Image (cartoon, rainbow, N blue to C red; front, side, top):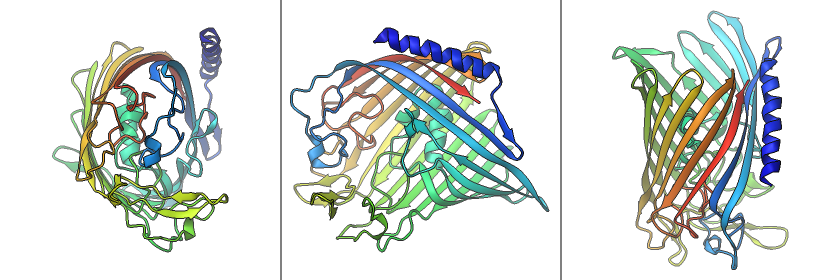
Length: 433
């Protein structure tokens, strides 16, 4: 099995290397295509496939807590591929300083659309050098995209840091205003505000999303401050996920009856920073406060077989039949060392903290999660980087994972209900074209 996988990787490296050498690029008049392709192979301990008695159920559902009997867990191989092209409409001069541009992009994970029904980018932008820019359509939030790249990607913690917490990551019906760069305290200040209407047509519980992004740059120091406030999105602890609406029924999501479903409210406040100590060493870190209103469990319909369809509940006491608010604090740290023009080493850390809540039932609030990674990258050709990585995870105790983790085995494949620790190592490559 190992020989087959590594032989396949060798073939892929050869193909990508030839592609990179050929200088792959597509330019068709005002249209330009860019993007990236990525592949990773890893070997991890304490893995258990479909260990839940009901695989695929959200961890907030009580019946998802159960582990199937006689399941075996141990060391296993896994692989992932990502492909994301960007189709850009180059800026068109409209006169009087205004320019119009557009962007369309989708991501495929293991040859399947990453998040079905949602484009990563599908928008138009109007810019002016004095007034800033206005963007309309679908695009990523800053809470996910900035945390994912560069803070997470460069340290091997893109998912653990960027995809955890109480935020949302992809917008579908949004408007974003970005200011032009402003002079502030002898540095550059960038201000941005985003609003998303969510899916339209809901008769009750209309969604509304707000995000403020502030970036300040001075003498190499980069500060990123992000605040999100969202009403009536799906209750979640997956900051990569889309903001749509609080009620989702397959085939009937926009006319779903409320059935006593209360409003859902989530917010996030994040501060991240990067600073180069010198030409070789860069330090980075982040702190994030998550806040959830909690969401009551409600039956919102039935499927064709007469089975009940439940809403997305959150931090719900099933015995007392009450949802509770909660908050938690997470943080990240990172260090990158650029040995020379080709070699770069890194280490990253993510801590998902215990949550504060009055919920008498255990839904993961008393657990914490620590992830630590190391990595080594080599720029084989311009745009093509080969890398190796390793990491470990540790939970404070066995049981449900922390509230700010989207599932009990998120990011590492180690299920906190079965093991308190695990480790992994692997190789990968990424080509940016």
